[in-house]
Length: 411
Image (cartoon, rainbow, N blue to C red; front, side, top):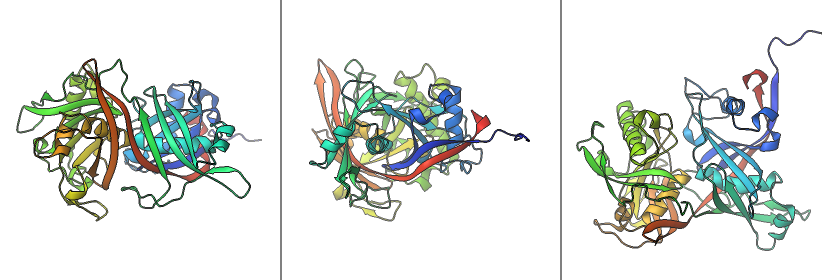
């Protein structure tokens, strides 16, 4: 009997889901090949091949990625070993062009899919799911492993004709950046900043940020550095030469501009204390994020939808993995909520208008695809700002459940 010249493909159970304005491949930890169930090169190589990276063409044709940071994502779920939690959620942001997976942060968009996926995978206690039938909502308590945080997903459920409680995925909730409506999933990020950590790592709500050598008109501009949801650098759109109404076509085809923004992002990572130097910061594209804000103004979203300045509090644009995001990353939305509800930040001032600062409990901001409403509660404890809770609504849907195939010799 002849032997295959090359190792045959390996089939692994997987779920392909949209969560918020992102898509990712979800795995049950126990379904992964044994050598991929632990952190390390084997796991990374396997996931890279699933997504189709690294791809010098930038299309990820030979994998499940779609050539954008929003769709180059992987998730590993497991039954939680944490008290009062249902599921562990581990997120990996796959680099499109490089053989690299960033495990440093969370994906807020895919968080919306975690609760539903965990129920469908049988990772949430069956009695708990059954007991949620009366209320129509199953509260899934998620332990986010990347950042060691608690997230609560309010997953809508219904009882089918066989008397089984199922996840409700269809609905009329519309999320800008997603073409079709679906069921609303409310997400709560509990204590998104450790009480022992600084939500504002420099100790200031605004800093004079040294951007010398970055190609801006000034060597120093105002910035708000925040660590909530994901480390984020907020700047004023005008200081970057922007209006705050930019779309992907205005930014992503301009290499010189992208390089300038990447340099600023790396310098901001050092200023926040995340990295020792710029070269170290350049190796981690997932954190920090760089975003710019401006007061509310009317613009045309990427879909052609008109966004009226009277319907929003401010406009925000954010970069993800070296590109302007087509909507807004969920984790960056957490940062926006925390900053907007803290008086004195650049985000709060942009939302307050006329250079003022006021107390806010929620804001609706405009992004390239439309608008998003987020809420937050921040308070000062012994002179330190803390975010107690941040909330938003997203939606999620299964696209495919089955097996993903990868060449057996790739990991």
